[in-house]
Length: 608
Image (tube, rainbow, N blue to C red; front, side):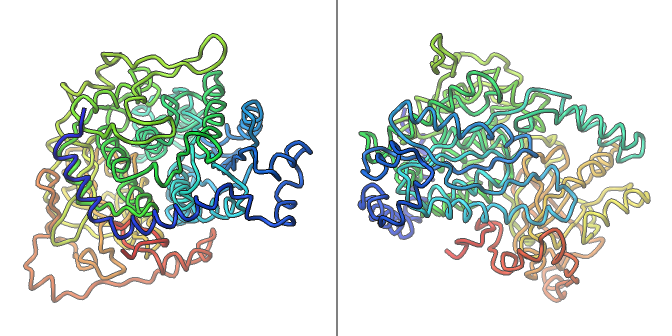
């Protein structure tokens, strides 16, 4: 089925806007690809260094440019549950590549930090910047020019977007992303959230809270709620970077290993030495990017991707805007209810039909582009499948179910959970912002209340503990933008604001910081730009100003006379405490160079 008329129109608009940057990008890509197998340009000393530890047979093959070589970029570490499974992947990939007549080398490692560990801590101020650093680190690994394709091993928050930026920067190479999968289900996410709120109220202690958290985050794999990490996996599948059906298979299972082996063999098949050359930069185009945005809306995915998708697209010369994302939100129904949008976790989503069912439903009404290239071949319809383990240990694929196995988790296109997507863009005299509404009750989509201004998470938490917030208000937490302090996530605010909302108060959050995919039931206008440190209107708000957040009309306003607002001097604060400790001093150049949220909050290419 051809794309829906409005989807096609938005895609064409992106194509026209992107022509100058996309054409330059493709020219550079094709020039690099025209050089042929990359090792042919290396001198003998260069090549000797590159295969010094290889076997004699491998050296002979690499010297003659007869055998494709896969470069593995890995985010492995054994502290973080999502990335620990990658420890064994290089050996599996090397073996699979050898069986298929190829070679694989670990080209480099990239950092993988966990926002769950750093929430509310100084280290969180490095989190967003780690995306661009990951892209740069991956670029260093691939710069050795030894490879015919790249395999990317990464899962969480900033890691996958950074790896995508790298993959598109080396867009003359084919690229396949290999996931690790989600951990098995533990303590239900709503129960974890309940204990967090009890702790915020002082009704349970640290021991009870730690027990609940440990039962929720309990083993290898991605956290099971639908945050940025699992939104990443959805994106890699719907954009065609994953093998079909591979996103949400648990670690340590025979199917997970079979999918990894299959991906390695497929990567060999799509190099320039094979018959299906699929360079990543040619494969990913404006249609692929639109498919990613559609998937984000249809699943109520992470707000972080309103920045990441912009930056990822820009790495391929494609200029995606918040306006594009906003217009697509109005067209795309919400088809998934996964915590915090519902009680289910991603394992329940997978059991209900997973990505295969979701893509099939979107294709029914032309809400995604089918005529795209993927690492699996031509057309997104090939992804409307359920991956299973065959009798011989290889992957087999069956058509995705005609009906959802659990309509409370995964809905059909005819009976969506709501008519539009889970994310909305807000505009008004406070600038631009993002709100995730898929987990917010309809009666709270409009909040009008007096502002209470804070300059840190701790200030708000202290006021809550002192009983000063038992009323209707909009918490304005400013100087949390990328230039101010790296734009940390502010999830430590969710429990106290959730408690106040449960007490019957009308509360909301307004911030130039982030909340991410775990944004929950409290209305939160986030990523406000211009940010406070740039003198944006958020820096002119005073306690008592009436703030109106309207997620229905898509507006964000302070109800103050325009002349009065213009006469106010933007507030400035001393940010020196954010400049040192836990590595923050190393990222001073990033804070100085970073672009605004709506342009991807990147240091790499924010100047369009």
